[in-house]
Image 1 (cartoon, rainbow, N blue to C red):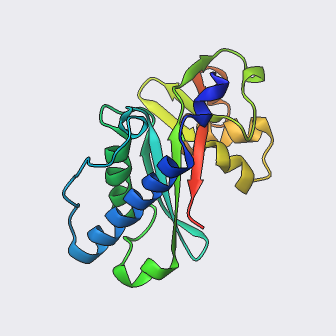
Image 2 (image 1 turned 90 degrees about the vertical axis):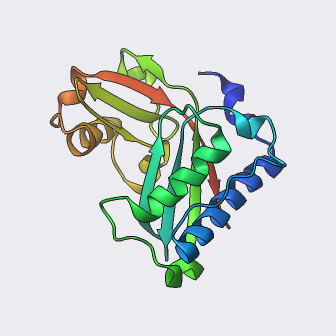
Length: 188
């Protein structure tokens, strides 16, 4: 995994992504539609095609998290789309309402390319996200999931395998495993 990859966004670019996400959320909650896409003042780094997840928290509790591990559209556009999806289509939660906007905090995870691993010694808990794939079943946990749990590496893999990929607690032992890192951007 390229060490420098997680440093490729400037502070201004990170703030721009958070602004794009917030503006998209406000527009969607106010008007029920996505904003017209303007690519003015968008740097080359924000035009790369890479995976990203958008997590929405209301009063500190997760209220939506949607993303893609890879993308065929520019990062800034993926952030717009995933923001709206996280607010409205995460089946685990009810859709966000405009009246809740003052209590919303947004967290963005810009992902590095995935790397196939063959031994869990290559997986570092808290640094890497995991993607588990077995046939038509797959699931992922972002790296920051480790912060919110007291799981060991094996428990992290077991929960992802059982709860996300739906291949049983030990399914990860025979599945394909991939790791990735995330640049995590949070609203203050």
